[in-house]
Image (cartoon, rainbow, N blue to C red; front, side):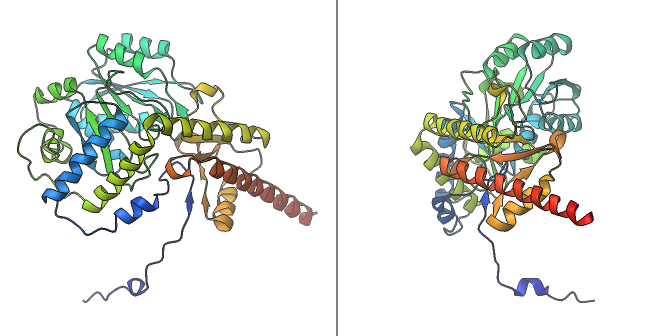
Length: 395
């Protein structure tokens, strides 16, 4: 039997231009897109290794860390979660996971696969965890590792008090893992000052880079723990001692670990360069201002934010309650069909309950905020009018 060439590949590639204002990815700048059109380099070529070194310095800046073990995992944001837990966990370690949406549960699933004794501390629906709840959970479970998402993109919840959680982890000789995939650049994060042991983020969110490389950093304390493991990390691909050698983190000769995508490196390097040129504080302030404007606009439209307590709202992924009687899919389809604008529905615990509006990177501008508010209102009113006409036609 001979399998023929597929007819679909005889057509020219066509990719439409869309405004990505869901929970991620965000649109890449022209600078990033042009960078990725450069020639491919070999993964051990000196020019490629130089770009990796420059990316490392950019990651240290956005995380506000001096950690030597700062690098990228070749993979989507999930690979950061995998690498953090894979390297820290040994069999039967108690791992406590803070839940304010779906990502704590996802981390729990991963931790269990690495042999952890998984426990949860869960906030009530639509709010962040309190310090009192976290302290009680620590006293009860005495965890070896504590995981929390600073920003949960499924609910639009911002988990504050990371600094106090860092102090609590030191008190219990516990390692703190913070997922900043959806929050970094939209709110303040100080890895070293807040005593965070592992942090990772997504390249495709506020950074506005291509998905596929996950910036991650391990504290010296975490690295010492990993070196003293009784057994090697269970997944070779996520072994940070090996990946770190490839990234030149430890002052030893570089080794081949895997074939990194040089084109993704170009894009991330330019995204970081643009981010650094604007300045971390300025980027955070811009995202906060855009979110505040969106929230005010949502109120003026007679809609309601999902997270009731304003300080607990994530500026980058804004969750808006779907009005009663409105099908969120029809609203999202209207915005995409008429304007090529992405507005997303809920995820995990918020499915069917919310719209999620992303204000990240290139799309975190006041002009884009006003645009998405106008289109959201137009879409909702159109769907309501259509429903009224349908009801009348039945009479």
